[in-house]
Image 1 (tube, rainbow over the protein chains, first blue to last red):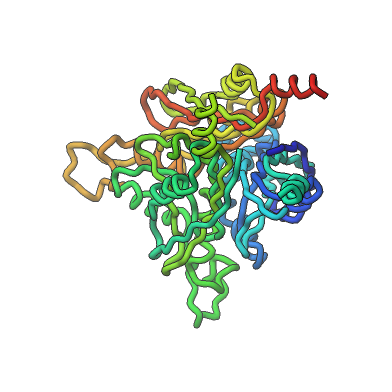
Image 2: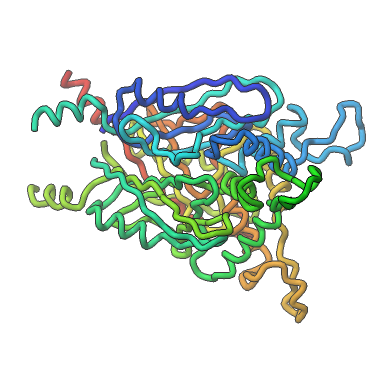
Length: 161
Length: 161
Length: 161
């Protein structure tokens, strides 16, 4: 067993989903690993890592619609002196910031996926998404870490049989 | 350290919980592993893997009741031409399909559990459930993957001491 | 690759967050591991392990406020004979028990974090919290399990190069 650590960076464009499945598989292949566990951790508290459907884009729209329906934005104006208008205590970083922390808590920031033959083991209809919860463009870093067997070592062991 | 990959299949009977704890422990024992990490990934986007209470069956009823209370079904009829009646854009696979994707996103499809002496390390009151979110009977596949130490190798090393 | 298993105990004081990040890093360092995967499992069904912001304490207050707003307590009195007043079927262990199981299901009890140079790989603003969902003081046990490379073995292999 060997391991490798790295970071993958993604630019998001406001609330919504970025399919990172191909980037993850590419990282496995470039790292020359055959099989093992692939640990992903989003290094942020206002976006998620989530596994969901890869076929109909409306699924992603509806996920976004639903999460907005249960997590309200902060209804404040910077001019307002009415304390009652503020739903969240943490409002200083924008009306979308505290809702983003909540959405992150309700979903995942950490996944430990299995892979074989250089590819993640996923169902036919599954993709791995970086789910952005902030309004603006963000640079997001994902910690990637593999523990597993390298292709070359498997080749070597077959050679020596 | 060695690893093994497989899939476990379960038949679910509509919305509700299937306790898979014993099946997972059996897989560890049959695989002859003593200790390590056990990675589980549901290969579907409309059911969950979740850890919850194993004692009172009413806990599971109440979990189901709660999740239904926050995730609405799609109120559409195939005869309707009124677009307003459709809550989700993704409605083509049944009124329970989009709610199932949402319930999956709010819970987990991926767990990485520790085990020792051939058994998962869990609390007294914990069980691992496959949580079905669709109405009908489904065949569900769980990817199972162990990285750890085999019983035989521990036995061997004791022998050689 | 080597592994180590242990348990860490924490005393919680009712609903709220305990930052356990330093305790986890200390465990890694005491165990003399350099790099690997750190599997955490809460052995309970009424508290969570969650990653969220470490800077403004109001974020934690707002998380607590939000989760209470979507998961109702059980409105029953032990004197009441009116079945209608009971929202959950599972009410025997207190009005905060079933809500705690639900909050656990909506968040996480299991994390698999990566670490390097004896420290967890986390973002600048991330902390790992034990999130208590019960009213009273509780002793909580977290299963901790590392698979990785020890500091000494890395030193040895450098020596022998």
